[in-house]
Length: 89
Image (cartoon, rainbow, N blue to C red; front, side, top):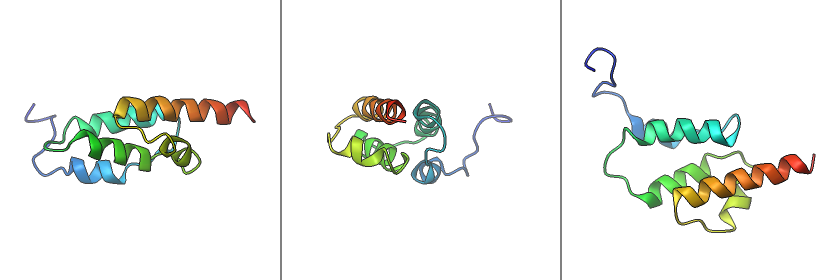
């Protein structure tokens, strides 16, 4: 763990706030959750807000209009929004 684990100098919260979706929602979710699991002292409101704001621009308003209160809701809405966008192409 000492050799391969995260160091005390890594800023997981900072990395989490800068993370943006570049591929599919599921991949973004995986990256987000990996970083979130290394943070401490942050509540669900923080995680939900930063997850939504890191989504692709065309998905953000579609998720925000439902005002999700949990990460699970935000993830489900993001996947649904992306599925609907893909169906219209």
